Length: 559
Image (cartoon, rainbow, N blue to C red; front, side):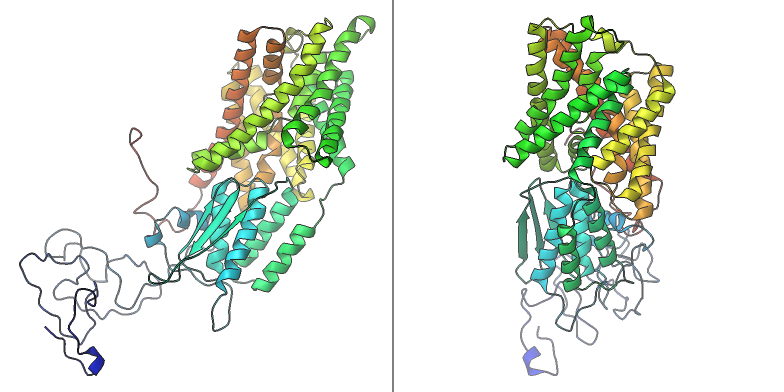
């Protein structure tokens, strides 16, 4: 049948390709459908329902039309959702929630169910420059990924920037070294894809906070950030120097090792020896980095001076009258080298479904750990050949000193924050968070007699909870409030005892200690992630009404 129309161009037979899947607009006669072999389309309007609907300022694109009952579709149960005749309305998410939560909610939606983006930043009549927006998005994601941010948070940031500049149907993808983003203007246009590779990584949480501030301004309607302004601010962030000089980082490394030695029973002499060994290792690592050596060899070199200092104090023990535990010197030096930040990020990526990135991060952690093992074992083997009395019992039976150990935990977190190049406004908060974590661990393990793995997991969970709450109020990343606070919980003692067992040809004892160290590390990572999820669980989820039909994927028995 040929539909009648006023225009000559409309007088054409409607083939299957030309006919839309939706009902023709009002005024055009609807052709009857053959009853044989042609089921009714699920997008066709029920009989008696008008296509003219009043415009709605707010609402979901998938809601039933007003006044239509759930069983109006021919008695077949609930009617199917359809696109309204006047188009897909704009859905406004809760503006009071941080942009991280809003973008994370949209990322977890299927692409076909995401609402139309609201253009936050203004453009000229020609619209946004798609290649420049994609390039800006990739550069921002590169800084976040190079700074140690999790893959899900990097994707949320890239998604927020692209939507703020009006690009719909964008799909960011993040792996360990590669970022890409694809934008498809419409269903009939070719997609535009851009990618960027992360060549160099560095720890600078001040720069990370500045990038989060830029993203927050871009996603805020009250702040007008053009593409040129965003590029200018991003260039300033890259050019900014670190907030702390090199000598401050070296002193902080020694302070961290000395405070860690106090946590495991060391005194004043042990504190000074551990600090001196860690500072020597830090300087040697800087020297190797300047020569272009890979990080593996930098860790090997950095692990040797603290171990050598402990062996030297052990050999001097019979000739010098002093009370101390030389093994605590080696343990304190290990605290400054253990890659806790990369471990937490790797486990977090695995728990959130980014398995490729998680595998790469954990492989990097394994290489760093092997480097530490090689450096310490070389020195310990030399000490055993020199008949140094390296006995683990000397450090296992340490006295419980609540005040001294709590102050040491706060000092350790403070020094760790300086090493991470954190902003000065967050150093005090993260130091107190580390002190609280140690108090919880000591109360459960030393007083309550609970296993160290469970105590570590609970303390790390509180760190993740408090860190997530602090970051939400500051609209910033949670890493500056979490990473330094888990410093007192790192498994330095278990790592040292495992290495000592292998150096003394006691493989069973060494393997048991190293297994405990791995369990403690995983407890820290899982606890931090669980604490962050608990923080989101009890807080308002933006767009929950729109995403209530599909919150997350669920698999049963691995299928």
